[in-house]
Length: 224
Image (cartoon, rainbow, N blue to C red; front, side):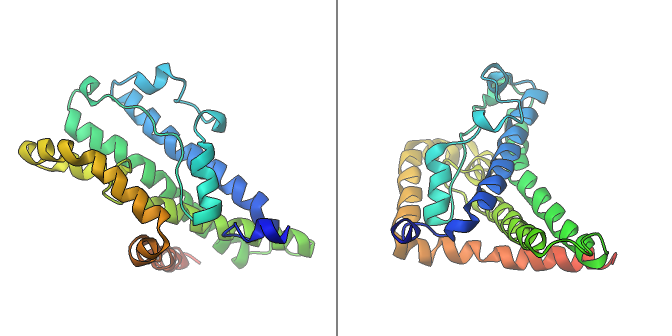
């Protein structure tokens, strides 16, 4: 067990809670992409069975395991063909954006539920093990969804942030980016897998999850 723990970023005994959180977060994220694309007229994801809340069709084994080891990862990308949209660039931005926004929504729900539980007597008299389990679950639920929200906005392929920035750029710039997009993926992998680069770039950026959590906490505290 100690040997396995050395490879993991999170405590071994908390992995069931983390796994449940990832199933929820990844599934809703990819479903949001697929559903928005389908509603805008692109049935590519629909034909592949991706317009569903079934986690089995959305989870990527390697991307999920990477979260356990490195602290960040991904699910299976939803295939999108912007040419099927009436307004390809605008609708492609929206389809790319709804994925991260779904995680922000889940994070906000998590913060709100914790405030409700702490400000009411709903858990009064509950066994200590139940309260501990809820604390662990919501800790990961809030952090992981905040992390996925921020992580997916990084403007490097294959993340959603790249698709958003790509569609906002002039046509000439987009043509140039197409020539170098393969290197963007290479840069992304370097930032993920080389610890010094990750500590200098991605990890400081993801530390903003705490600031985002505090902002949501202050907002919802107005009502309690």
